[in-house]
View 1 (cartoon, protein in one colour):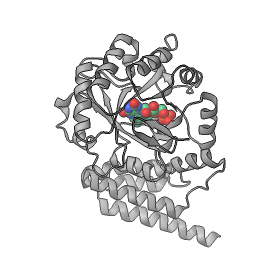
View 2 (cartoon, helix red, strand yellow; view 1 turned 60 degrees about the vertical axis):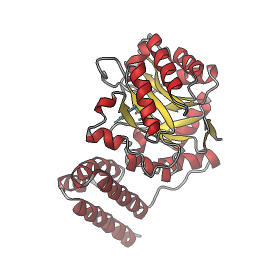
View 3 (tube, helix red, strand yellow; view 1 turned 45 degrees about the vertical axis):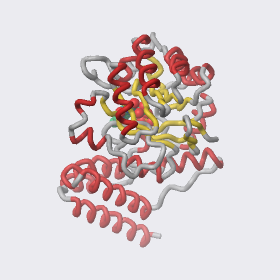
Length: 330
Ligand SMILES: Cc1cc2nc3c(=O)[nH]c(=O)nc-3n(C[C@H](O)[C@H](O)[C@H](O)COP(=O)(O)O)c2cc1C
C-alpha cells in the first residue's frame, strides 16, 4: 500500500508525527532508518525574523536527510505563512506541512496551530496562500475540531482538498481535549469517507496491532505515530512489518537497542554540539530507559553527567553489564 504525496511515493504507511523538541534531524533520520515511511520536522515559526536564533537555525537544517524532506510551519497570518513556505523550499523542503494540529501558543499575536480551526475563513486564506506560494506539495495537520461542540474536522478537510492540499493528518482529539482522554477515530473515519486525498490517522497509536485496527476502522491511508516513538524508534519497522505481513516482528535485543541508542547519542552530540547535545540526550535516553526494567537508578546517574564522552561510556557499560548478566542467566 503506497501513498502519493505529489511526486513522492511513500512506501511504508507509518509516519513520524511532528513533535517540537523531539523530532529534530537526528531523531528523524533514525526513524527513517528504522522504517518510517515519512518523517515531519518540528514546527518552524512562520515569522522569518525569528529564524536567526540558534534553535530556529537547527530546525531549518536538513542536510543529509533523505527525500522527501517535510517541514512543518506554524503561524496565523496567510502572507507570512506563504513567505515561510517559500523560504523553506529555498532551503530544501520538498513538502510543506501546515500546523493546525497542536495547541501552539499564539504566534505574532495571532492564533496558530489548532486554535486556527475556529476561524474557517482564516483557515481557507492560509491554505490558499501557502498552496499558491510554492510548487511543492503542501500537507496539513489538524485535530478533529475546536471543541466537542464544534467538531468541524470534516469541513476543514473538504476545504483542504479544495485548496489543493496533498494529504491530511488528523489527530483524533479536539483542541479543547489537549491530550486528555482517548483519541477518537469516528471523526477520522468520516473525514476519510468525505475526501479523496490521503488521510493519516493520529492519536494514541502505540502498537502494530493498534495501527492495524485504526487503519481498518478509519480507512486511513497511513498511521502517524508521535509519543510512542519516543525511546522506541524501532516501532516504525514493527508496525510496517505487521501491516505488510500480519506477523509480529520480535523486539530488538539489548545489544541492538544499545547500538541504536549509541548512534542516536553520537548524532545528538554532533548536531547540537556538546553542551546542548548532552542536555537533549538526557531526555531521549530517559525515554529509552523507560522501556527497560530496573533502569531507574541508571537514569538518575545519567542525568547528572555533563560530558558527551562520559554519557557515551556510561550507556555502553550499563548495557554491557546487562547483556553479560543476561548471557550468564541463560
Ligand atoms: C512533545 C510534543 C510536541 C509536539 N509538537 C507538535 C508540533 O510541533 N506540531 C504538530 O503539529 N503537532 C505537535 N504535537 C502533536 C503530535 O504531532 C501528535 O499529533 C500528538 O502527540 C498525538 O499523537 P500521539 O498520540 O501518537 O503522540 C506534539 C506532541 C508532543 C507530545
